[in-house]
Length: 269
Ligand SMILES: C[S@@+](CC[C@H](N)C(=O)[O-])C[C@H]1O[C@@H](n2cnc3c(N)ncnc32)[C@H](O)[C@@H]1O
Image (cartoon, rainbow, N blue to C red; front, side, top):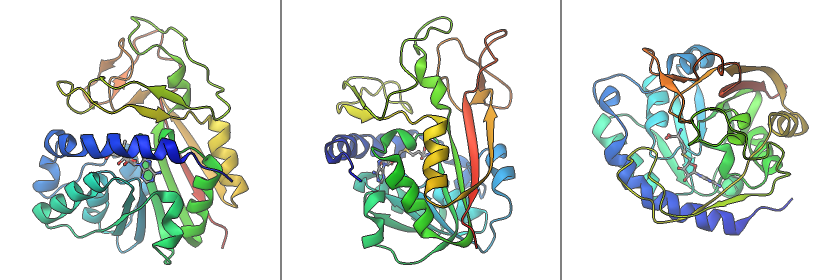
């Protein structure tokens, strides 16, 4: 099974560039004040993780990794961006929360780690960087203990079909991409600091709900459930409005489509 090494090179440069920006712009006040940054939906769906060995794939600057630690887990975060992990190590010191961080592309994790985990966690903005969804699912399956669980929360792939600057819902992109990536130019505002224009381009992939489901099933996991939501964490489309709960939604009558999903799967004992 092949992977797109050029996509990894392009995207790693971008993540190394914006990691220090995120170190300054992500709101870490909850972590510093003894709390965590996970949203209530995730907390409810993940359940009690006290004492569990958790592997966090694509952990970025470690804010979610440290949140999992705060919830009582023994956590290992993995990311291919050295700049991201430097910020994560600093946050670990500042919050006094312990986590182990491993620097490598997730596809190479077998060369760096031989343990198996009770829970594998990955969330929000992770699937689009993966050039091979079957390789990704194989890593998830390999690193779970028998009976271990996988949790994913991600923006819904259907959201990618829309023009994010249109005043309504305008379909401009394909849902079915057949694994063909899209190259995005440099110069867009960073998602966490809109005053910062990102210098590096990116190469991104859209995986359909079927692609994700089937890759995990083919890797030997049992899907427990998939939840779809009509809200998301950021203003993904121009016409969205934020609610008192901090999530963004489409106005009536456009709000009849999925924007976010979560999934739980188990490795058979
Ligand atoms: C959007 S961030 C993760 C988001 C996380 N929810 C957050 O906000 O902190 C995506 C992360 O995936 C990492 N990444 C992308 N492709 C990767 C790969 N092939 N292997 C390991 N990490 C990868 C990037 O370095 C980046 O830190």
